[in-house]
Image (cartoon, rainbow, N blue to C red):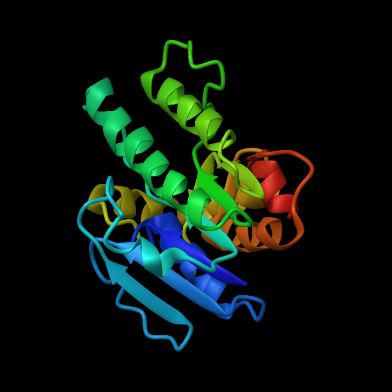
Length: 219
């Protein structure tokens, strides 16, 4: 399986990249980002790209892939709806539309979050934007598309948040997160489980397009 990975330097993306490089079924990982991952592997290729609304100069390198794991994401805290929509909806759909034209047999996996609003009408801005993003991804002509909606995610195996205060919270709360992952699979998962679940749905499929934390952990 050949995989394109967006967001490989973020917390979720770091975990997904690790699992892809460890998995015998994954032949190549093409990481697309604004900064290098710092990871060395014979499986890994990287493209540094600045404009995530226009992939015309690099799209020839996207052909022939089986799956895309889209792990880019930003917090909506302190952000206007217009700005959040640009960074969440516009960028995701630009990449996905390009890939769907080049790889109609591709499986596209998108990381959203628990509480995403599929009606696009709720009071929470981030949930509406995420809901529209999910809905429009599911309309694209991929072989299949899956929306991952994890609640809490515990970073494992040296994976770190790039936001210092978030990383500090993870360090302090690590024992509690480990316990929650074991006793409350509806509300907690890990970067390892997310990565493994993405590989499995890309390879084997899943009965429904939207996966919550419990589905991710089951996989």
